[in-house]
Length: 266
Image (cartoon, rainbow, N blue to C red):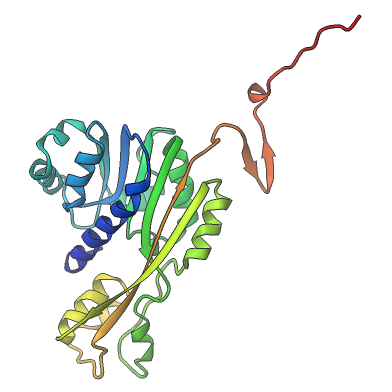
């Protein structure tokens, strides 16, 4: 998510936190991916005053910018900051720089639509989440930018989202990856534009077109609005250490099997 649309990321983070108002969770460690200077920092500081916040920095964000924003939001949070890494590092390694069972909450705001393999992301979240932990996320669904599909003969090179999953696809994936009690929700947001240049800036930031093809080109009949399908979800990690499954077969560690004895009836 690039700078022209950063306000959207902040707005969706606020809505995600509102949806979590009914969730009871004591978090000692929180992973925010992608993290950025936004209003959510003050909310995290208030809701989880003793938690360490581990950050995977969004595109174009530096550690200094995030530290400055945390200082403004709540100076005490600087003393509880955890690890901070760049999103590029995660995308290259396909792995969080965190040990197994190390966080209680993964908070992911508008990321999954940019990942080639969301299931791998879910597996990494499962790996780092502790028993009783929670994953909360939002992403752009397949109806995002549907107005652009009507631009017949346009020089714009339209791009599909890397992960065009609707909320049912994601709900099924959560169950497959052993998350419990998934809750999915979706809403449409409509952005209205007075200038075509503003629309072009946003659809480039949302990665809906190949930006290399738009330089110096005037696009006729551009829409004056843009639809965003925003999908929300959260799910729990329950019974993490009871069994591991592969190819629909559950494998139970022998150490997890209790031994029952009975007295001799004679």
